[in-house]
Image (cartoon, rainbow over all chains, first blue to last red; front, side):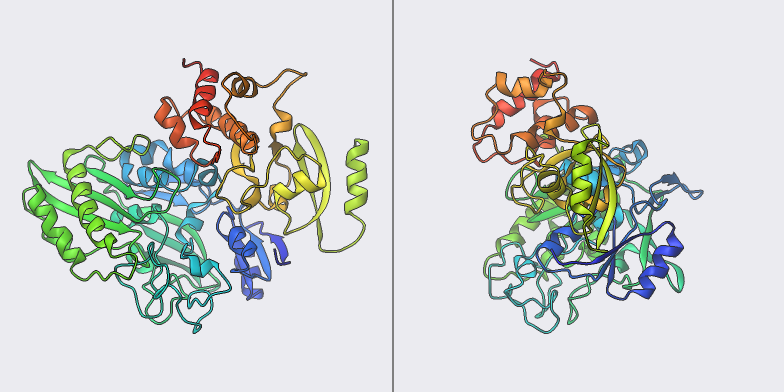
Length: 338
Length: 171
C-alpha cells in the first residue's frame, strides 16, 4: 500500500477543517472499500482522516414520523435495528443481501452510499478507465462487460453502482445530510448519485470537502407490501446482476402507489417515474407489472456480454412486483422462498 | 509489560516519525506497538505479533480467511487499519482455547471433519464464534447465509454447518 498521513478527528468541525486544509485527503470510517482500493493503487490519498469515532452512530425517530440514521451506523446494526425491521423492512432486506456479515459489521451506512463501482477495469490500473483516470478511455465498452450497465450509460463509462442498500433508499426517497466548509445541506436521494455522462470520475454530487452525517427516511415505509429481490451468480456474497427493490400501497386488489428501483443496471439506483405511474390505480397482476417492466426497459441497451440482463431485469421486475403485491417478500436466507 | 511486548516495542519504535503508537488487547494481553498507518490488523497479527493462525487469503475482503473478532464482532482483519483499532480487544484463533481445552467450535470442527486443507479454518471458526454471539441464525439455511463470507475451496461446507449446529445445540 502507498504511504499516507493519518489523523483522527475528535469532532465534526475538526474533521471538516482538516479536510479543507488537505485537498488530497479522504475520510475513512469502515474502510471496507477504501482500504481495498488503496491496496490496488486505485485510490491514492495523501492523508486519511479517521471519522470512525465521531458521534454519528445513532438511529433516532424524527418529529415528522421518520427515522434519522447516523452516517456511522454499521450496516449490520441498521439491518437488525427493530425500527428498521418493523417500519422499513425493504431497507433491512437490502442490507442483508449485500456483502457478508463481517463486512456489514465494519461498513458504515455513509460509506455504503459512497461505494465505488466494481467494474474490473476500474480496479485494474494497467487498463484505461475514465472513472479512475479522466480522459484515458473506457476498457469496458469493448471488453468483458457482463456485469456492466444496460441503462443510463454513456460512451465514456458503462460502470454500475454496486450498493444494495442504495436501491432500497431510492424507493424510500431518503434524504442525505452533509456538512462542509460552507455549512450543512440536504440532498434528495434521487439527486445524490449521478449518471456518468462525460464526467464518470464523479460518482455523486457530494463535494470533495463534504462529509455525510446522516440519512433521513420519510415516514412511508411500505412495511406491508415490499421486497428486495437480488439476482446474482451465486446465492450469497456476490454483487447483483440485477436487483429490484419494491414498495407498494395496495387498495384491495388494486395498486394505489408503486415505487420500484433497480440495482446492478446503471451508474445509480434506477427509477422510472412513468413506469411507476402506469401501475397506479391498476389491478395488481402480471399484465400490469409486465407493462411497467417494458416501459423501464424500452430504453435499455446491452453490450457484447450483458444483453441477457435486459430480459433478466424484465423478469426480475415482474417477479419482485408480484412478491410485494402478495406480501411474500424475498427471504435473504432461503433464496427458494417467494 | 511482558518481555515479548517490550521486545516488540523496542523493535518497532526504532525510527521513523511515520510510526503511530497504538495499544491492542490481543487475546486478553495488551500489546503496545508503534506502526505505520498503512499496516493492516492482519499484518500486525502475523508479522509483528507472530500470531500466524489468522490467515492471509485474498487480502482484499473476498475470502474471509482473515476473520477475527474485534470487541466481540467478526470483521476482516485484512481491510482493517490497525491504527484505527487503538484500545480495541482482538480475539484470534490462538485466543479461543482456554486452559488447554479447545473451544467448543474447535472441538466440533474436529468431530465433524469440517476441513480438508485447513487454510480457511481459523477464519471459519472465528466467524462461527461471531455468528453464535450475534444470535441471528436459527436454521441451517440461516447459518449458510450468515457464513457466506467464509470461502472453503475444499468444499467442506456441509461439515462446517454440522459443526456449528452441534455447538448451537441443534442436532
